[in-house]
Image (cartoon, rainbow, N blue to C red; front, side, top):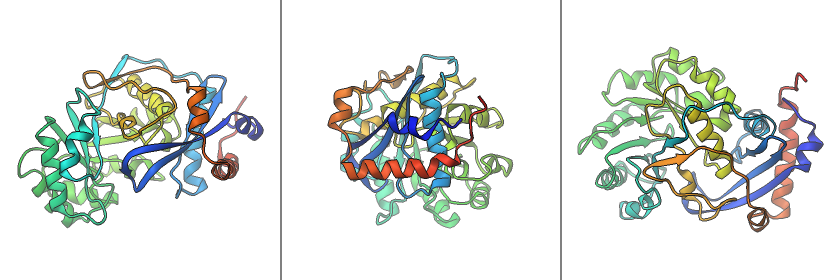
Length: 323
């Protein structure tokens, strides 16, 4: 659907959320929130994304603001702790923000770091959390990924390697060489055909994110067409975006793995007072930002204008409403 541009601009709030640690190379996360008749939506495409890709994120925001959510099958969702590419000595501090989490996702293949850094970080996590998965964001070649898989499992198992290589062909080649399960993220959310990685037998698990795929309904439609388990994850969302991820996870017929929706712990402030995970779970339900926090976290005028200009560039790429 495509609401009038003027309506979206009237409902727009741009916030800058401070982060506890550097993640994806940033220490402040900017997102544009839309207050709509059905709730709140979040437009938070990463700054480097051009309008054709960012428009999917805007479609997700419009869905959240203008369409009621689908029915859910569970009232809480298991979540993993998220450990950025911090030194091993900081792992316990990061994990303390995810009480009860039985699964942790650890960032690896960070530019400027070594495989030894990754092994140290993973082992520090493994000492505190029983189930560990790692995310390389496509940072390895097949050869590098095979070596990393061996090194990272020398002291214990991994639940899976998330996006170890960039391309579908590389993932398929790696999957034939190693025993560690492979999860696909960017190969799904950044692909013209999000199902190609599944057809190529290049992944054991699909990591799906609401905003990059165009909304909760789009995510559920993709999940319905694949025959491998799904993990719903955050795209470094505010509490508003996390609520939509939880809705998607709660609406899935089957949920076999903890979801990557605990990234709220990476922010030192958010648009609501975010509840900590309870026994490794987050509750499902809508989020309404606190007006005082919207004011306190408002982005500077020049950054608000940047998001307005971006919304204007993406708006024509939305599918018009049928009625």
